[in-house]
Image (tube, rainbow, N blue to C red):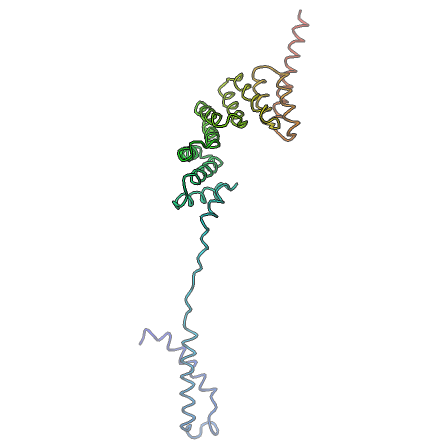
Amino acid sequence: MIGNSRWLLPRVAVALLALQLLPLPGPVGTARATASESFGIHRLAFDFDALWRRVTSRPAIVKRRRPVPSLEALASSCPSHDAELAIRACSAAIASGRFGDERLAILYYDRANAYRRKGRSDDAIRDFDRAIQLKPDFTLAYNNRGNAYSDTQNYDQAIWDYEAALQLDPNFALAFYNRGLAYAAEGAQRRAIHDFDRAIALDPGNALSFNGRGNANLALGEYDLALRDFEAAMRLDPDLAYAKRGRERTVEALQFVGASAELVRSGE
């Protein structure tokens, strides 16, 4: 009883207020109410109880669940430019176990690319491995795994992957370009130039291939050839910062060589 006192007091207060508002027969303080009038009081109390229950009852809180995306929606989100979104979507799609080898290889490939954008090269390489296991003729997976190995400066393994991609597609200009970068990083500038030549022959509109060959020529001291390559890259892509810096370095080298030659001539 005591435990319910906090509910009893407000009920009594409201009931007393209702009695004060109830019209009674005759002047205030005269005879008691008749039977019908007493029934009216009881009816008021009954109505009050119903009202009290309705007011004090707490409606159940219904929690709305987020709509669950379909597997196709998850798979479609894998190539997203948002790396975190791509990783989550691909992981959920892979974990579903609802896709065949061909589609599963693409999911691993997309997640690997997202890992690489996040700088997680080791995770990317593992996913490229899985994609290639599921689809051994996956040319892009070989190429991009080579890029991941290049990120870790494992150029020998990167070159192996680019060669595997070129065996599958001998006209894959991007693989020639990437292998050229790997050769250049190892100091094999002549091999790099050969690959850049092949990339340019297959895709003459790629400014990066001209830029790569320019850097290789610059490293070999072929300044005139380097200048020509950097200027070709800038014509294709005027905003290519790499080519602008390469051209500046080449001009400085030419000026230094010219100044040195002038000193030699003046000393003779």
